[in-house]
Structures are given as structure tokens and as C-alpha cells.
Length: 279
Figure 1 (cartoon, rainbow, N blue to C red):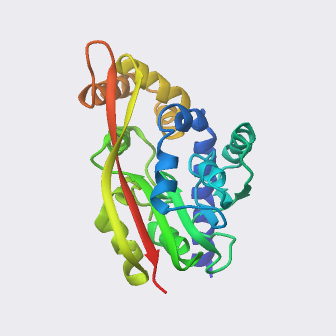
Figure 2 (cartoon, one colour):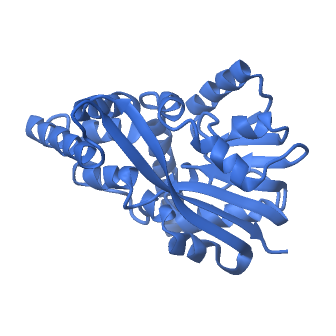
């Protein structure tokens, strides 16, 4: 009983930490300013259409959920972080989209079995710490024959390398937590879903990011807006040498992935994965 209680408390602590991390900075700005095309690309790949019931897991501020609603679907956008949901409500109102916003843990969704025609996640579910639990929920709430679709950053792509760069400076991950970019590996996702899905299609694609004039602009933008980067800098805030070292490492990362004389043009790689739940 003690071990079970300890496990529950540890899980609660992880989720609380994640909730706070994603509330840092301004992730809605990152989603709308840097990767606005990802959500519509996922909606199109999933074949979302009018009359369908759609769940967006770890929806953030609705990068995919809002386009799905505008396509005529009945959409539920779920996320662990209420601040992101509130931002999503405002964005949805600006676009004239109507959908439901629900605070929910990707590893313990408050929805019935087989409830949705399409279950999707756009660079969201990959950040749930326990991959197998999240994958189990992803499949559970999708109806037999329904569509499962995800966009996840690859380990080799820019965001995967961003996390690799920050890792030496970040807090030690809690026991059992798996690296988010593993979701960007086709074999890993196939292994998580197993024979519960069929008609798998997986391909690596890129989204172009050309907002920054120089590597330092990228670094300062992420230090200000991206929760995981903010949390990493907070972890080393008392050590100026390590802060300076991480500054240099992030500048070098941006330079490697697209530094030019006049601007930083980067192609961020992701895995687009779709499948059908086996009947």
C-alpha cells in the first residue's frame, strides 16, 4: 500500500511540475508565430470533416483543435495546463470556432471508451512522461475504425536536438519519465500502439521557421516564451558560468540548423503518423 501511495504521489508531482512548466512564458505565441501550419496539416492528414467527433490530446492553445472545429467537426480540446486552455478559448473566439475545452491528463483521460471518431495530438502527447500509458489512452478513446493522428518532433530534428542540448543543464527527470522525442521515431510509436492499430502511415516532414535574424534572436525568444527552456534556465540561474555556456550551446544549435549571414532559416523535422484503430 505504501508503494502504491508513493507511486501516486510521485505521479501527481510530475504532473504538477509539467503543468507549471507549460504555463511559463507564452507557448501560444510559439505555436501561432513559429508553427501555425502544423495543426492544419494534421487535421488534413486525419481527414477531419463535418459531423465527426474529434479529441485533441495535449491541445495546448488549439493549434490543431481550432482548425478541426473550423472544418465542421465537434471538437474537444484537452490539456493538462489550464492557462493554455484559456488562451485557446480566446484564439477560438477570434477565429469564430466553437469547441469544448477540458482540463485533462493525457495518461488518464476523462472520456469513455470508443468515444471519438478521430483522436489526434500536435506536438503534445509526446510530452506525457509515461509513453505507454498515454498511448493506451490514445487508443482507448478512439472508436474501432476511427483515425489516430499525431505530429511529433523527431530526435534528430531541431526541437529534438534542442532538448538534447538542454539536457545537461535541466533538472534530473523523475524516475520512469521517458524522453519526449522518442515519439518522433516511427518504430517507437508502432511499438506503443502495437496490433491495436492498422493502416499505419508515417513520414518525416519539415516546417520552415524563418522568424529569426540571428542565432541570438532564437535563443532569447525561447528563453522568454518556451516553457521547457525557461525551466532549464531557472535550474541553473545561480550559476552564471552555466548560464553563459547554455547561451553558447543554443546559439551554436541555431547556427548549425540554419545560420546564415542575414537570417536564421531552419527546417524543423517532425514525424506525421496516422493509423486506424483496429475493429
